[in-house]
Image 1 (cartoon, rainbow, N blue to C red):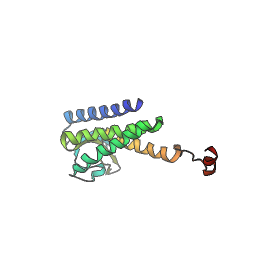
Image 2: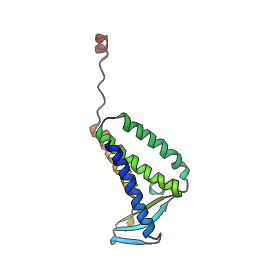
Image 3: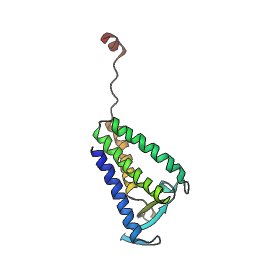
Image 4: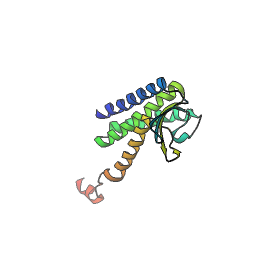
Length: 160
């Protein structure tokens, strides 16, 4: 049941960090952690990653539970520990941001990085979990997962 613990840790860490930010940072604040590179700020995102689907959270309110159910079924039906951990990261992140959408209609983001003069889109702990989970899922699909071997048709007839 490691996947349950990971999912819950992602949700709790995400919601706790967002609570701390909302209670301590004003929307106009940019608190330098590493000057000219990393800041804490408060941003309420009505859309998805990189601001897609701005002010159309209905899509997310419908889509996220459907995806979460699919991920949950996949976790339960699969015995591969690595895959379960990876999907738990994605599930925890999706639920963390979904809680924000239900509670306030917008996702709370607060981590801001500058790459040179370019401000990378502001994100949160749930986004980190989803991104890491997605990268690890790609690694799993490309390098770890093996299709079950199919029996030759002649072998199947011999067994009957």
